[in-house]
Amino acid sequence: MRLSLFKICALPAALVLLSLSACSPDAPPQTGSTAPSEVVPSLVEQPATNVALDAEFTNYSESLMQRMLQRNPEWSLFSGRYDDAHRVTLPDETRRADDLLFIDAELAQLAQFDPLSLSPALRIDHNLLSNRLQSMRWYLTEFREWQWNPSSYNAAGPIGLILNTPYASEEDRLRTVMARMEQLPAYYQAARASISNPTREHTELAMTQNRGTLNLLGSSLQERVAASSLESAEKARFEQLRQEAVDTIEGFVTEMQNIVSDLGDSAGKDFRIGEDVYEYKFAFDIQSGFSARQMYDRAMAEKARLHDSMDAITIELWPKYFAGQAMPEDRLQRIGRLIDHLSDQHVAREDFISEIERQIPLLADFVSENQLLEQDPTRPLVVRETPEYMRGSGAGASVSAPGPFNPTADTYYNVTPLDDYTDEQAASYLREYNHWVLQILNIHEAIPGHYTQLVHGNKSAGLIKSLLRNGAMIEGWAVYSERMMLEAGWGDQQPEMWLMYGKWNLRVVTNAIMDYAVHVLGMTQQQAMDMMLLEAFQEQTEADNKWRRITLSQVQLTSYFTGYAEIYDFRERTKQQLGNEFDLQSFHNQFLSYGNAPVPAIIELMQAQR
Image (cartoon, rainbow, N blue to C red; front, top):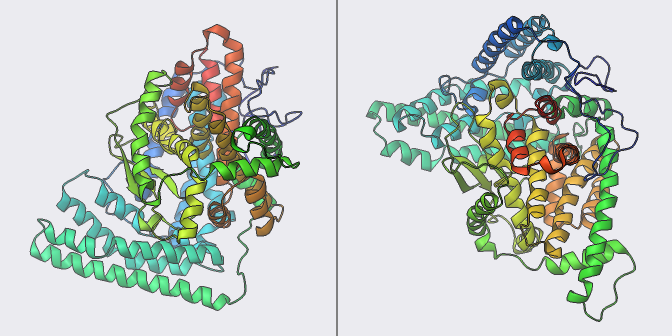
C-alpha cells in the first residue's frame, strides 16, 4: 500500500501538518529494530509534476522567505544576513495584529498551489512554509507565550552576535549596536505592556538572563568603544545610549522582581500547558510521524529495553569492580552502584573546559579515519564559556551556529563554567559528566553532532530547508551520532563506555517521558526527581537542572528521542533493503544534504531518489 506524506494523523481537529504516514503503528517498535514493514511514504504513484508550476512556486516561496526575513530582523541577523541588523522588532499589540494579517494573506496565497502537483523537494518546501505560518498564528492567538513568558524579552542575543561576528568593520558594528540600543526603551516598554499573569518560573528566568544582558553592556563594552576609532561625538552618544539601555533593563529586572514578590507563596500561572495544547505544540514543533502520546509510550518501552541492556553489562563487569561482593537483588540498585563507582573517574574542576577543547580534534580525526561522513575543516568551531545572558535555563552546553547567509562564521560550542557551583554541586556535575559521558557530550554537541550537522545544513540546497530548522531533526541527529560513533568503535567497544552510553541515552528517553508526564499527566517534582535519580542514574545537580528546564520549556525535550528514533529506524530499514550496497558515509552525507528539514520529509526525499 502506497501512503502519502501528507496524510493527517490523529491530531487535534483542523491541524494540517507535515506528518509521516506511520501515525498509528500497531505497537511502538523499539529503537534499533529493523521495522521490516514499509512505513516510509512513496512518491512513485504521486501525480506528475508541472515544470511551470514548479517555477512559479519557487519564485513565490523565495519571495515569501525574503518577506519573512525582512519582517523579522532578529531572525535575519541570526541567519547571517545583516542588512537590517540595526532594526529592533517591537513586541507590541500593533505588531501582533500586523503579523496576523500577514500570516492570513500568505496562507491564502500558499493555498493556491496544490502540493501534490509540485516536485518532491518543492512539496516539502510547501509543507514547511504552511507549517511555519500556521504555527505562527497558533503561537500568537492560542499559545500566547508573549503574554506569560517574560524571559522571551531580552535584547542581548542580537547585540552579542553583532559584537562577536566580524561581518563589518568594528566601528560599523558598534554603530549598529548603538542603533539597536536607541530602540531598547521602546522595546522594553512594549514588553512590559504585553506581560500579563506570567509564570513564576519564567519571570525568575527573565531576571537572571537580563542581569546577564547588563554585564554584556557593562565595562567591557565601554572599554571596547573607548579603544575604537569612532569619533569623539559618536563615543559620547554611544555612552549616553548605553547608560539609557542599562537603566531601562535595570527597571525591567526590578519590575520582574516586583511581580515575583507580589506572588508571595502563590505559584502564579501554572507552567504546565495541558494535553490539548501539548499535542498542538508537539505537532507544530516536532513534525513527527507520531503523536506526543505515542512517543511517550515508545519512550516508556525504550526505558525498559535500556535497563535490560545495562543490567547485562553490569553483570558482566561486576567481578571486575566488586570482586567477592554479592550483587544486589534489585537490578536498578546494582546498575546504579556500578555507575556510581565508575562516575568517580572524571576530570578536575579546573580542567573541565580544557578537556573539552582537547577532545574535539580527536573526534574529527576518528570521523575521517572511519569514513563516517564528510567534514569541512574550513568551518571553525570555537569552544567558549556560555555568555551570561544565555545562562540560567538548565542547559550546561549548547552550540550557536551561523546562519546560511554567513556560513563561514564561527560556530560556538558554549560550555557553562562551574564557577558558581559549590564544591558539592561541582563534584556532582563532574560525576555526571564523567570520563565516558563527557566524550558522548562532545559527540552530541560538536563532532559529528550539532556542529557537523549544522555545517552541512548551511550548505544544503534550498533556503527554506536551511532556515526553517526542525528541532527534532537537529537534536535527533546529535543523539543518533552518539550511537553511530560507538558502533564505529569510538571507546574501543569497552563495556564501560556502553554502560555509560546507556545512562546517557536514558536521559534522552526520560526527557521525553517526563516532559509529557509533567505537562500532561501532572507528574510532580518529586516523582520526576525519583525517575531521574533512581531509574536514570543521574546526579543530583543534573536532575535539579533538568527539572528547571522542564518548568521553562515544553515539548523541546521530546525532540531528542523523537528525531533519534525516526533516524535510527530509517537507517536500519535502509540497510536491510540495500544489503551489501548500503554505504554508511553515503547515507549520512545524503541525509544531511537536505538541511534542517523534518525527518519524515528527508525520508521521503531519500526514498524518492533511490
